Length: 167
Image (cartoon, helix red, strand yellow):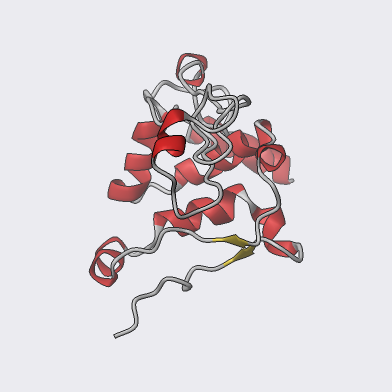
C-alpha cells in the first residue's frame, strides 16, 4: 500500500531538482538532476589534517603559518553551486527539502569514514534574534540529518546549547 501511495504522490507531485528545478524521475534523495549532481564536489583525501582544505597532504600552508585554536575541522562538500544554493535555500527560504539531499550525499560519500568519531558534534549557534526570525538553526538540522548514527553511539553527542550565550 505504501508503494502505491508513493507512486501516486510522484505522479501528482513530480519531484524537482533542488538545484535547477528540472523534473526528476524519482523523489528519492538526493533531489538533484544529473547536471547538478556533476557540480557537487565531495571532499576526499588528501586534505589538510587541521582545517580540511582539499589538496594538502598534511597541514596546509595557512595552518602552518596561523595555527587555529582547534585540532580539526572538516567539511563534506565544496562550497560551490549547487551546494551553495541548497544551503541558501535552507538558511534564508526555510526550504527543508534540502536536508534529505544533504543526508543522502553524506551517506553516499561515506562521511563517517572521513571523520574520526568526534567527542562532540557542535552545530554553530545562532544569535537569539536570528533564531526567532528564522525559526530554526540550520547548522543543527544539518548535523542531525547528516550524522544520525553518531547521535546513538557513546561518543559524538549533539550539543546544540553548549555555546549558548548566558545573560
